[in-house]
View: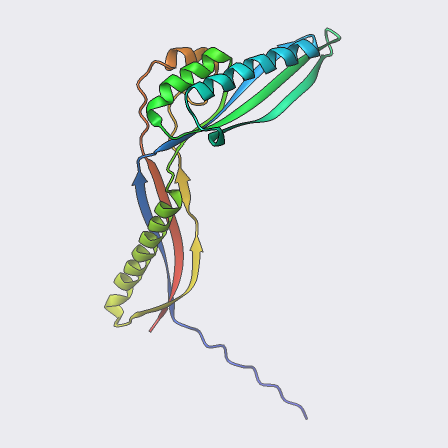
Length: 215
């Protein structure tokens, strides 16, 4: 006769809490993604016009004394667009330049010059910190400290102590402030380029969920 015995699973007393840490930082650099877009009925001419405008843009960027390592062109394309109603093909050429500007005092001059030299689409403007990894680490530590303090508050009335952490889940997010006109079309950009820039702060937030053993 064979007998089997179920093994009792021992429950480990534990507490699950959330913690949040925030660090606010004034940005010291801005990342800009801007595009020259040209359209027309002749593919060769459209491409030529696009190249000329981007060449003028790159020369202006160099004139601003931005290091070569801090800007690059990408996403070069020439696409045919067929109009089924008119039975006609037109062409759309685009080139995108990505710039990291580390002297924010040049921001207004740079943006205005980019528009004047041929940029007609802003894809992204993001203010950042060159010490982002350091501030993210600080936010995570603050979040863990808050989680442990919460756990200690909850169990203090029970005569128990907070032991080791057995699980940690991290859900951190970073907010990159943008000027109000960052993602608008160039028609509105001309009027906005003379405005005073209010950069704001980057708010680096770390959110953690922690399970502690109770002793």
